[in-house]
Length: 116
Image: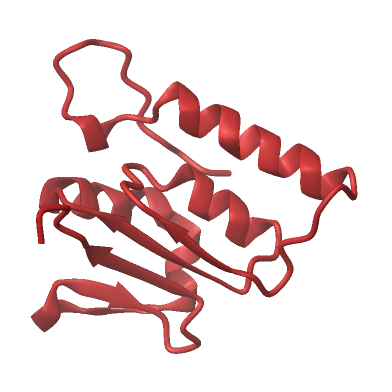
């Protein structure tokens, strides 16, 4: 079970809600993998502008080898840490760098500033 904030109101920061596009892409990925149309086993996934991280978490649950979640918003990345929940068991926080990664390198959360 994944608990995600879904806020439909207009004044919520971009990365602090689960967008319809994320829901559709996660559902599509699930249908394609479960239906045998494609395999993401051991694939490396990069989710740009991940927000709540739904698509990356879906990919990991479907067997992706690793996922790197990125967003430019530090508050959104902090919320993402909460959303990941049970996936935290495969990693450890590296507080001094502000990034999080797993020892197995299956999961990483990184800040990405689009202008840089």
